[in-house]
Structure formats: C-alpha cells, structure tokens
Length: 615
Image (cartoon, rainbow, N blue to C red; front, side):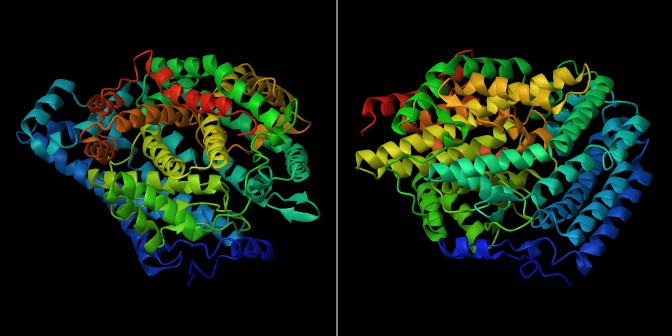
C-alpha cells in the first residue's frame, strides 16, 4: 500500500532550503483514504457506481410525478438528500484523487491514477446528468407551492434557486451527457497536459536546475543579478515551449467558445459571471474602477519604487524586488504559524481555533518538492471531511501572507460545511473574501506592533505590492483573457499575437516605470488560472476591494462585527452577495463601492509617498 508520507521525495536543494525555515508539514490524506490501493477507496468507488446506477433507475423520468403527488415536496426533498449524499461520496473520491496527484504531477503512477479515476468518475456521473436537467423542467408554480408547504424542500431553496438560474443555458439531455462525458478527453485532457508539462520544466540558474516555483521565488531576491538571471531563465524555457502553450490556449479558448455558443452565452465571460452569481454590470464597474485608478495606484507606486532602487525605470524582474534596506532573512515555519494564529486570535479566538487544527492535524502540505504543483490553494474537499491547504513555503514575508490567505479559505470552508455538499460551496467572488480578510488581519497585526519607521515602510510597501498583485495585476489578467477569447472567435492566435496582447495589457496596468525585457512577452504561459478557470482572476480583485470596505467597518468598531462576519462565512453558497453584504451596510452594485475599496490601497501609497525615499 502506498503511504502518502514516504512517497514524497525531496531534492537535496529542497532539504537545504527547508533547514533554514524548520520542518515543514506534509499533509495527512488518510482522513480521506490511506492510499490509492486502500480497501476503503476501492470500496467507495464500487459504492459510488452502485448508488449512481440505483439513483438513475429509481428516479429518472419521475420527478414531475413526485411533484404532482400529494406529498410532492417531501418526496422531492428525499430525492435531493439522496443526490446530496452521493455528491459527498463522489467529492471525497475526487478530492483524494486530485490532492494525491498534485503532490507530484510528474510521477507516472500518480498520473495514471489520476487519469483512471477521472475517467471512472466522469463515466459514473454522466448517468446522473439527467437529474438537474429534469429538475429544471419542473413546473415553476407547482415547485414554488411545494417549497411553501414542505420545510424539508424549502431547506434546499438556495440550491434550487441557483439551479434554476442555469435553466436558460442548459441543452437537451443527450447533448449535456456528451459534453460531460467528453470533458475528460477535451478540456480536462488539456488541463492535465498543461499541469504535467509545467511541473516537469527545469530552469537553469547559475548552473542549477530549478523547478518553476523556486525560480519565480528568485525574482524576489535582493541580488539584482540573480533576479535578472532567473527572469531570463524563465523567458528562455517558456519560449522553447511556447508553441505547446499557445496550442493549449487556442484549443481551450475554442472549446469554451463552442460551449458558450451552444448554450447561448453572449459575452466571453458570461458563463463565469453566472457561476459566480454576480451580475456582469457589477464586474464591469469593478474593472472600470480599477483601470481608471491605474495612474494613482500602480503607475505611481512603481515610479516611487524605481527611485528607491536607484533606477529611472525598473525591469520587469525588479517589480517584486525587496527594498534596499529590507532584511532578507527567512521566516521560520513556527514563526509564520504563530504570526498568523496570533493575528486571527486578535480578531476572534474561534477563528484561531479553527485555523490551529490545520497545523495540529496535518491538513497542510508546505514544502517545495520536485513535481509538486506550483502556487497555493485550500481545497474544501467535502463536508464529511475537512479542507486541505497546499503551499510552497520558502520563508518570505509573502509566504506568510499566503499562509494567512489560504487559512482564511480554510476557515471559511470549515464554517460553511454545515450547509451540506450542495450548498457549502461559495461563488469565487465571495470565496476570496475570507482569504483576503485573513491576509489583512495578519498584515495589520504586524504593522500595529512596529514602531520603527523603516520597518513600517517595508511592511507597507510589501502590502501595497501584494494588493497591486491582487487587484491591478488580476484585472490586467482579466483584460488579457477577454482580448484572447474575443480574438480567438476570429481564428487561432499565434504565440507572437498572444505575447503582443500580454505586453499591451501589462503596459497599461504597470505604467512607464516598468520596462519589459526580452522573454517577458511569454510570461502569460505559466498562469494556471487561464487554463483551469477562464476569467477566475477578477474574483481576487472583487475580494480585495470588498475586504477593504469590510475592514473599514471593522475599524469603526461596529458592534457585533465578528458575529456578522462569521454568519457571512457560515452561509456558504446559500445567499447572494447583496444579501451577505446588507448587514454591513455595503452594496457592490453601488457605483461608488469599488472606489471606496480602492481608497485603502491609495491611502497606503499616500503614506509611503509622505515617508519619502529615506524613511
């Protein structure tokens, strides 16, 4: 039997790096399954197949009859509960499959396991596609009457209301089944190709072969030559693989266009807006507010930073460089843990108690390893289990903020789990609220305990850069995606054309103080969100601006804020953003809302400007 601990292999460089920051935890996936050959995993696969077949045999073609029955509401509620129970089981299997795979996406055994289980789950769930389609064909008045008379069915009203929003864009049953079944050889296959290719890439820096994550990390090194060398290595390897990445991007954009056209979505981002349960006009207002603020935010800050670095213009590899006076010593894992938990406890002890379980019960995988997926995430898994956090921790202040961010997600996912498998999941726009709020709590805790002006400047500059990356850069990403997907409707884009769109949107966002050296035109290639979740990126900006407004309410010492905040997180996916924000007196549809959210970032830049270059 595979044991998930010993199957993780570290390179000597990873071991050396880890020794500087302490022992980093690796997650314990046995709360899901002991391994891919575990008896309970194989048993659950068989159980899932049996339940799916029995569910289809029992209920397909019968939902309207249930509704017409005298106790239609109670019967339908029972069917939904059965569907929810299956969803938890399928989710448990799929979560383990994914988490086991990302630990080393270059391992052939894990690749095969991921591919085989993906195929089995897709085949099984194809037989369940009928349920939501048939449910949406139920007569609306009769369904409403049933919900009014049955408390059991009314419990599922949020899920039913959300499902009904999908109705105008759903297709005939067999077409939906075809789309679903072919996903494993369509978008799913291209996603997997991207992941495995990116994980296998090696970048030569000063004679050492590095993976993506540590190479990107070098662009935050204090040594300008190391930043340049890392950036050039990234550019060279991306260029040598750019034909493949262009092919993946073109294929997925066309695949999405076909789906959008068949379903009747007009704008390239409409399907994302629907899944996020946010109105396109609200997103448009956010994008316009951020783009209009580029000059007073990113353009102004990067011009200031160039001066601090003694440059007239920064190169792209200098954008996230530490300030000259910044201490580049690494932050140990224990210190990172204490920093985040103390900040959470200062807001609400309950929040810290939940976050502490991630450390105590090994729900976190932190080391950088060969083949491990880059980046970071918190995976909610299923309500019957618990979330897992993945990091690539390397001891930077940004890594501490990433820990705070992902634990914010984790706390949210734990609190929302009581809503059940169908209603715990939160739209992406609101899913980023708790994570960004966790970052803000941690940043404010660090800022409040410093009295040294230089330390304050470094902390403020770091937070400004994180916020610019979260707001300005993500909106620039969104604009890039829009241009790519609209242009793809007219035909394939060459790698050069993709690079031109990338440089155009980056120049607009970052301003004249940042110069793009050779190779940067291909940096679009490594952004996983473009591949896995088109138009996901605006959710980061949405969450950041929303949190700024929420935090302003918190600073006003509004009575009962913590309780309102926890109620918002516990709601999961049961409420629209307008309902969740109403207790705080906030409204994302207000044209001034986004400007207020951006004002906190502008205020930080104002303070840095007043400090001057020698603060």
